[in-house]
Image 1: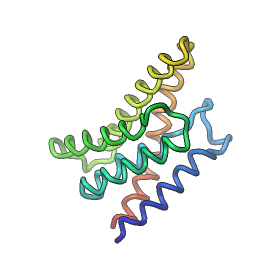
Image 2: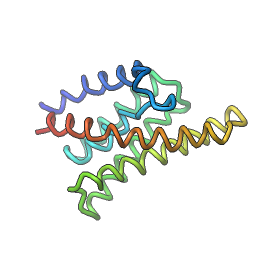
Image 3: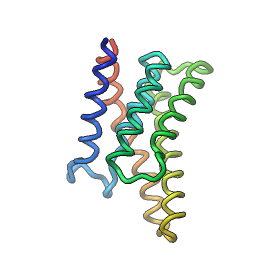
Image 4: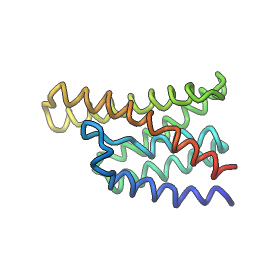
Length: 156
């Protein structure tokens, strides 16, 4: 029953991501809050429930943000599955290991999104591409402890 509390959390995080305050933007980049939630759910819930919420988070982000071809839904499901496989192989009890997993997922998500934008738009300046790649990924990891704490409190 506690798992149903994650639906309002998803709605809250989407609202927060859409209306991210300008003074918190770092080089005009925003953290990917739903990506953090999708990865965090794998650590605190069983895989099937985490996967369902990853699908919901991806669909919600695709509905409200302009991303092509249900990209976030596919990527969030992929990162949830790969995180689940990784947690069965290595110990993920330490915070910096979990932050590294989020960093890798954010970095790969930004690379894939950037390549799709380059494919559709054409030429994107290298500085803007690298800024979106590096700064956004690091900013996502910087917000990770807040989302992990929220997820842990709700799932406990």
